Each structure stands twice: as C-alpha cells, then as structure tokens.
Length: 178
Image: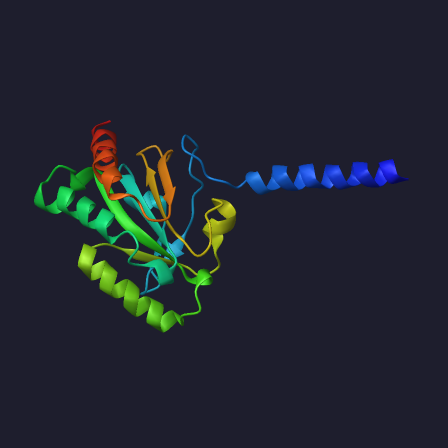
C-alpha cells in the first residue's frame, strides 16, 4: 500500500512538472498568438505588425518604470540615431492588469502616459492570458523580442542590466535585416 501511495505521489509530481513547463515560452520557440485590445477596445494581434521584429513589454503596472532606461535606449536607437529601422521594427506594451490592485481606469491613464512618451501602442491583458500561454511571471516586467517569423529570440524578466542594452539593440538591428 505504501509503495502504491509513493508511486502515485511521484507520478503526480512528475505530471505536474511536465504540464507546468508546457506553456513556458523559451528562446527558439514559435511564439503562441494572442489577441488583446487597446484603451479604445480596438483588437490587435502579432499579425497586426506582420513582417516586423517585435519588442513586447509585458508589464505589471506596479513595475511600469522598471525598464525605462532600456526603452529609452531603444527609443534613441530608433528615433534619434536611426540605427533601428522603424519600417521593420515595432515596440509596444501589454499591461498585465491581473497582477495589480490598481483599478483599470488608473491603469489606462498610466498606460496612456507611456504610450505618449514612447509613441507606441499599449494593449491590455485583463485575464493574465500570457501567464498561462507563455508562462510569464506575475508581478514582473518581461521583455520578449520576436523575429519576423514569430520565433522568440530574447526573453528577460526583471530589470534589464544597462550593460545589456547595446547587445539587445544589435540583435534587433540584425533581425530587422534578415
């Protein structure tokens, strides 16, 4: 009886580990599609920007300023230095509204300010879809770089070290030229 219980216990643990990893996005994987809306309820998918390299910022509103230095570097490389070709690149944010206590009206206001600052699109994940579909952490700030074929080329959760900014910019430049 004890063997049966131990066997069942370890089988359940193994199944749990196997299924919990099934939805985790990793570098080299095809990125699962999604549909989210902006503040005006207009729907967007990754195909909205077909043929472009995407920088997707998946952000808990409580962490919205965490990667501003990285986004400022991307903005400079795109708009000032013109090293990243806007014709083949799009950076945008998806707000993880499920990870915060803040009301949706306040979240939309914060997102609106970011959208203006970076001249970009901000979408809203009200159900935490990317937590389950991509395995992204809650209460965090995750940056995902996706190539034109929708393959994940870079993923980082947390504050991107400033000494990594140029490496990521160079990767984006190379991906836009493919």
